[in-house]
Image 1: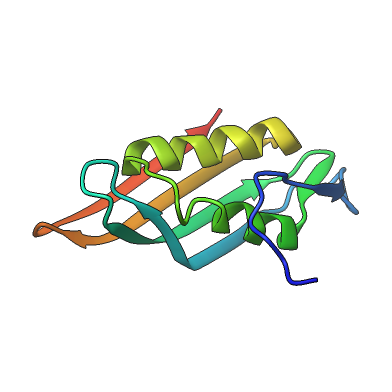
Image 2: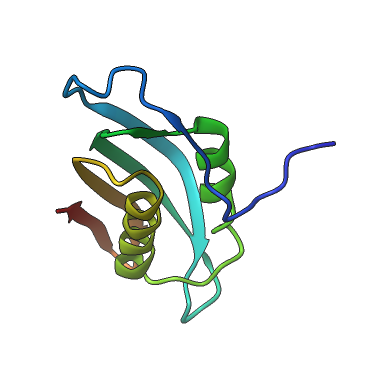
Length: 116
């Protein structure tokens, strides 16, 4: 069966929970819909975090980000929602989610949300 988008995120146990290290993801194909016009918005989502006991499983992250493709969301809202969902999943030591959205109406928008 082909993969389907889902909001269900998964995690795995951090193989080195006693060591502080940073994990970075860059997702250059993120899309959602403008809630005002219904037109697609394109972005690169960058995630940086220092795990505690759990790490984000990559395939579930890919399917989670894909789930926004047909969802209307303001840039600020979607960036903060991604952070909230990931923090709830893995309870990291720290995390930053950056939404770097392509130009729309002559304005380039970058939204950065951080935890704690």
